[in-house]
Image (cartoon, rainbow, N blue to C red):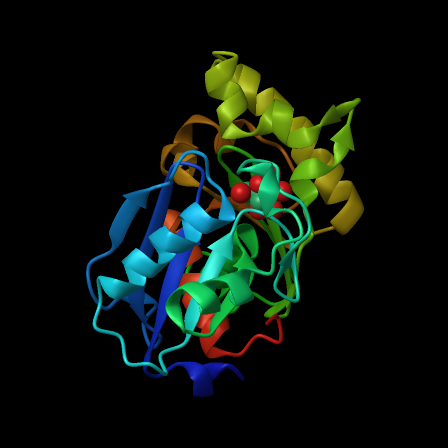
Amino acid sequence: MSKHSHHHHGLAFGIDVGGSGIKGAPVDLATGEFAQERHRIPTPQPSTPEAVAKVIAELVDEYDLPHDVPIGVAFPGPIHHGVIGFIANLDKSWKGVDLPALIKKETGRHVVAVNDADAAGIGEVRYGAAKDTKGVVLLATLGTGIGSALVVDGILVPNTELGHLEIDGFDAESRAAESARGREDLSWEEWAARLQRYFEVVEMLFSPDLIVVGGGISKHHENFLPLLHLKAPIIPAELRNAAGIVGAAALAAEGAGLA
Ligand code: BGC
């Protein structure tokens, strides 16, 4: 039994705030599976704090949740004790916002806010591709941006923001995210060359024992992971797009010390 197993009973609610959709579901913490069907509401435009908070309240209201169910919100920016440090891919007015305070005002409920890639990393470590892996696990989500999670012997080092490493003079995610592949119409080989450069730098800096690649594109991993040559094994995420919801729910249940 892992030292986290005492948290693995009961239910928590996870919410994943993304650039195109905001998704939520109750999570069975024993299995890491959804206890009820997931709901998705398109991200409002502009994606201001007030507009997103309303959508989060709507999602919570879709379910009949007891007041003491832990709620975790995964959010695409670094979050230091609830406060958004900066924001790359949502409305710029998020910078400096205290996310749990905002949600409390909107819903009356206490939430734990965590970075989206950190949530996905914990989802994969607790229930997915990196389950019970010892040592240094690095998860990278490839989507609109690049998110990163660094988990050492099951413990998260939050807010690593390795998508914003400056590599060859560029913000790394602007070259190597999934969105760059679409925007520049890159072939799998061309995109893989950019990923190779990206993961080489990350590997040089962190010497991971295992690299897990998440984000929606991880379902097409056969097209690009075999083209990468790194020291550590590099494998696809298992929970795919559920990882953020599941990890946010797990971290909320654990208290996480991030609130
Ligand atoms: C943000 C990260 C986030 C990642 C994936 C980056 O642009 O700075 O906080 O984890 O995108 O959403």
